[in-house]
Image (tube, rainbow, N blue to C red; front, top):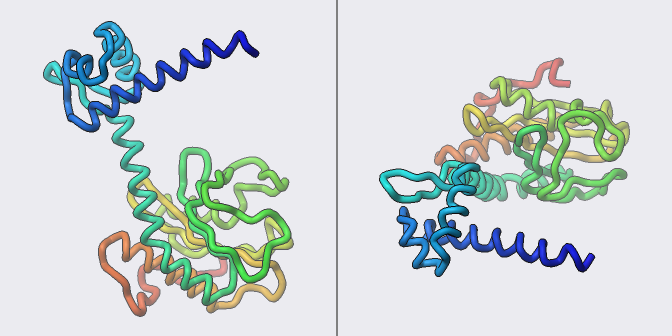
Amino acid sequence: MAASEPADESARSVIGTAFALLESLRRSGPARVSDLQRDCALPRTTVHRLLGQLEAVGAVRRADGRWHIGPTLKDLGSEARAEVRLREAARRPLVNLARATGALVAISVEAPGHGLVLDVLPGARPLDRGEPRPGMVLRTDGRSAGGLDASRTAWARAQRRARHGDLRPVLDIGQVDPAVTCVAVPLRLSSHDTAAVWVMFPSGGGILDTTVTATRRTAQRIAAALAGAGPRTDPGTSALPAAGPDSY
């Protein structure tokens, strides 16, 4: 174990130095190697080597003799800001949905190969199986940790629908998990970003039309907030088609 400590310490040093270069670019803007060398108090050879490694992964780019923050970091930053904005836009509508239904309420976004839970409000009645939590990665294929077919879950089906512009609610009355009923409404954030608003509660008694309507209207309120339309007292249902038999 002791033999690996110097290597670990060296790796931490390299990572820390690379972040120092990135922080200098973030703070001061495009810079020459000599500027970064002076600002970070690093040898010129170290600056050159690390910039080359960062450039290879898109973290920095060179233009007109100066180094800039690269497209990879900009994309990561944009995604993080978008998720924060979505969480903020969704918070009040989700609280109102939880109060109206008494169910567990969640919102998730689609990521490559999986879904990601952004926010969860617990329901009045706990679920027998483990409940989702913020930051949880949701598989979209294969089997979940509980042995369920992840691809058939309502939230996964809703996000697939959103990709194709199909915004009809998905209703799961115990088909995937006999102990859980779920309503999930697709939410299309952009041409390539999708999300889903969903409610979950213990099975028994089916799904009330008021629960489906409330979930659909919550998705509409979130979409309106993201579009800058502001709050609406009655968003209606025109933006989301009515649920048909194939929604089940």
